[in-house]
Structures are given as C-alpha cells and as structure tokens.
Length: 147
Image (cartoon, rainbow, N blue to C red):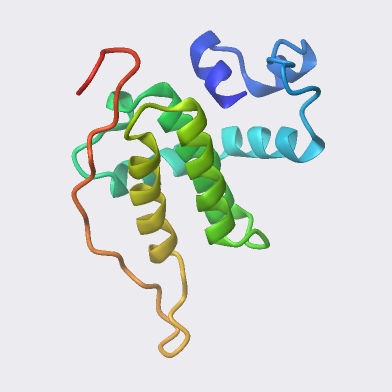
C-alpha cells in the first residue's frame, strides 16, 4: 500500500476505501492496514531517519520497493515497541529478497541494523547507543537501472 501510494499519489485511506490494492494475497489484515496508515502519518519522521542513516543514498535515489520496505520497518522500529527489532528486520529482509533487486536485502539490512542500534537503550548507562556510519552497498534502482 505504501508502494502504491507513492506510484499513484493516492493516500493509504483512499487505497483502502477503494480496495485498489493488489488482492493477490487476499484482503489486507487489520494489522497491515494499521501499519500502512500509521507509517503514512509519520512519514516525515521516518524519511528523516532513513536519510540520516543511509550513507550516500538520498531517499529519491533509492528504488521504490526498497524505500517503502524501509519506511514500513522503520515505522515499526520507532513506534511499535512490542515488536522486537530483530523480527522487524528479518521480515523486511525477506520482503526485500522477494520484491527488491539483487542487493536490496543487504541494503535494507544495513540501514535497519543501524537504525535499530541507535534506538536501543544501553542497560548499563541508560543512554541510546549510537551506531557508527557504515558505507552502504548500492541497491539496484528499478527506475534507472544499476546505480
């Protein structure tokens, strides 16, 4: 739904109301609907987090699929504390393998790993752990070919 939002310009509410999403896997679950709607609500915060983490990759240069997988996962990391970060990251990697380019899963893993590290509290000091920037591999941009 986030990918469709970006392609069509329709907001998630409209996509859901008109049932214009792909029903290949059936009706979206209530959880999926909620995640897409809330990710859209927090899009500026999510995009800032992704851009601040992905070395040498602005959001606009990222393939649509990778960008929206990251958006959904970052929403969960930042705003759904009951879902373990490791589960979020593993699901995002699997989505990237299925729908993204050849290097998408590595790119998604690298970005989400750094974001998750930055948002985990250090038990001994009560401080947020800051991840050091790591050079990202270039994902394939389905809009422009190999970067």
